[in-house]
Structures are given as C-alpha cells and as structure tokens.
Length: 268
Length: 314
Image (cartoon, rainbow over all chains, first blue to last red; front, top):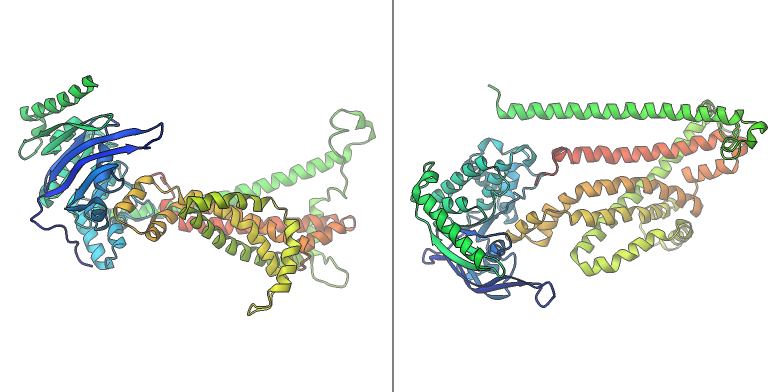
C-alpha cells in the first residue's frame, strides 16, 4: 500500500453538517439534547476552533465528524462522503486530551501503529515514523517509552501518530488541556507551524478563549443545553508570532468571542 | 559529550542492577522469615510441653492453648534429618528423594492443568468480551462451577478419562485426568481477571483504534490483550497455586498414585509412626507452590520490564 489518497482538489469543503441533532438516551427519563440542528461547513485548509462551556456538545460535534458517534437527525459529510465511509477510508487523524499512547510500545512504534493497521511495509513504516518525529521535533526520542516523556512530548507524539498516514483532516479534542501554560503556548506555536507546513484542515475543540483565537481562522462559539452554534467569528491576525498575543487585534478578537459566550450565558 | 543513547543505556543498566538487588533482598527477607517461623514453632512447642495439670484451671493457658509433645509437634531437626532417612525398610532411597519424585509427578499434572486452564480461561474471556449476552449468560455458570466440590468431580473425571479416551493417539494415563481437574480450577481466575483486563483498555485508546478503522481482531491483539497483561499475571499467579492444589486434591480423591497427594495421604494415615514425614511432605507441596509462583513472577518480570515504572502513563 502506498501513500493514502487524500481528496480530489475540486472539493473545497472538508466537513459539512446539515441540521444535525444528537440526543442521548432518547425516550428515557435521562434524555439529553446534546446538539440541536447544527449547520456547519468547514472549508479545506481552515483552522476551526469549537469553543464553549463544558457540556455544550463541542466534543460530541467533533466525535460526529469522526463517526465515533452518530447523529440522531441530519447528515454529516466528510470529504464529500458519509462520516462512516470517511472513517473507513482513514480520511482523518485524531488527537485527544489524554495522549492515548500505548505504554508498551516505544515512541516510534506508537507512531507506526496506524500504518501497521493499514498493512504498510515495515521499512516504509519506520521511514514515515522518523519523518513524523522530525515534524514534531522529537527526532532523538524514537526508542523511548511513553513513561519517559513529559506531558507536552506525549502530546507531540500523539499528533505525529495522528498525522502519520497523511490525512487531510485533523480532529483535536482539547489536546493541550492537561498541559501547563508555558508548554501550552509552545505547543500552540508548533501546531500552527505544522498547519502552515502541511495545509491540513484542523478542527480544534478547546475551552480556552485565547487558545481558540490564537490558533484559528474561525472560532465557532457554542451554547449549552441544547448545544447550538451561538456565533461564528472569523479571526484575521495574519501570521502568528510571539508578538501576536500582545497585539490589539488579538485582544479585540478575544473580547468578541468572550461577549458571544457571555451573551448566551445570560440568555439562558 | 554524553549522548541520549548512552544516558538511556546507563539508566537501563542501573534499573537492571536495581531489580537484581530487589530480588536478592526478597530472598534474604524470605529466609529471615523462615528462621523466625522456626523459632516461633520451637518456642511454642517448648511452652506447650511445659503446660501441666496445675495450669489447666487457668483461663487461657490451660483451656484454650493446646498442650504439645513430640507427636503433635515434632522437632524441626527431626523433620530435616528424616529427609535423609529411607522411609521404607526395604529400600535405601531417602525420604527427600521420594518427595522430590512425587513433587515432579505432581508438577507435571499441575503444569498441564495450568497451561490448558490458561488457554481455556483466555478463550472464555475473549468470548465474553465479544458479546455482553454471552458474558451475562456464562458468568453465573463459571462461578457455580467453582462451588462444586472437587471431591465430587475428581472420581468422575478419573473414571471418564480411563473409559472414554481410547480415541486419542496416545494411551490415556491417570495423571492426565488429574491435569483436567487442575484445569477445572485454573481456568476460573484467568477467565475472570482476563475479562476485567481486556475491558481495562483506555477508552481514548479504544476510540483511537476505531478512528483507524481497526478490525476487532486488531483491536484485541494490539490494544486489549497488552492492556490486560497486568491483570493476567495476577491471574496466572493465582492459577499457578490452585493448579498445585487441584493436582494434589485430584490425586487424593481420584485415587491416583505417584504424586504428592498420595504421599501425603500415606504419611497422614501412618502419622503416629513418624510425624516428621508428614510435615516434610507437606513442606514439599509448599516448596512446589513457591517454585511455580516464582516461575510466573520471573516471566512477568521479563515481559513487563518495559512498563515497570510509571505504568499509569497513557
């Protein structure tokens, strides 16, 4: 098997949600309306953040895109096909808050895992995994075990693993949620660097306003119970660097997102 | 300059040394404990012998604590010297050789029982993982199977083994029936801990496997089984001890000769003529138990060495 075919260039939308609702425990006393008629289109190559309070359904939305759960109503298309088909075609990579590294595998073996499942040749697998380690700047840690790495390093390995088979779409669920502030800012720069280098479409779930603003072209603000899209804010800060966090435009966008969040809070 | 490779190699070397040191410490503690145990035994024996009629009226000493003599508590030195003596008049073979032979015989039964119990237990665990209905339907029977007394099954298995195993390419030996009895005991902890272990895989890792469109078989082999290993090793240690118990009880209740069970039965029935012999053969069983658990522990050490420390990382 050679490199995975990503998508034809004619398709510009990567993810398309059409009036998607998700109800947990349908028809039972503990019924929960997690998401209510969500329409969302994500264009190829954008960095989108989903932000909202806990329980607003942002993780559920991400999991719908990955076909890890299915909508009660509506349709989810990824790369122009059903989310399930996209999952079977390995069209996306995924990273979670817990790195989910296998402790019995070395770093390089962890990155190789998806390739191994796809039946890649051993030599090609190793080669690709080395490339990925370069990308996340851990070239000399290939033979270490996860227990020997710091939290930030583990997340980098998880990202390398998610990108190992070159999916066009990267789904990230609070990947830096468990990291300290310094490591977190550092990791944000690295993710942006990877994004610029590879041109992936990234959907990023977070509950940090500065993080969402710093990373994205577009911040989708969600309100809870039932989960709805409260605002869809585009962010244009140009190329990010260390000064971006101190620029007026950055603070303005933060204010905009915060107000969108607060407006919905007081409206409940 | 010290490279990262060298550092990690040095760490590995240090960890290995540490592990050996820990092992030695364990043996020393074990031996020290043995000495303490012998002292307590001898001490109580002396105390029990000194109790006489005058003290029987005392509330605790005379009424609760039993008196002792050389028949109830033979001196430890006798147990040891007895090992060198031939237990039968017509043979010069020392008792130690009898016990060693019997232990090997019982070990073979237990080892086969352990192996088949491990395979059967794992197969059941994987089957129960496949379907919640199978798990619900099966687990009460698994539990019930362990409450049926072995003495009831053992003769059935031995007779059934000798009567209906003619179709096999080899001749069915009575000890093979004992292995089946040992299997009957060993599969249980493996199945129970196995299902728990297989389910212990990190939910994030399970979702990850799903996102890679991994097959059930791939998920089992690459994630669930490795995640279950710590649970399985606990089960294997339990299984190793019960395989010995199963073999001994199986021998006794199935009337199979040649192993420790028969030896213990013999020396128990002739206890008054030589109490140290029974003690010595029981110690043979204890040593066998410690040896098999030791084997599992050593295997565990090598298999799990990669994740020895900080195994909570995920």
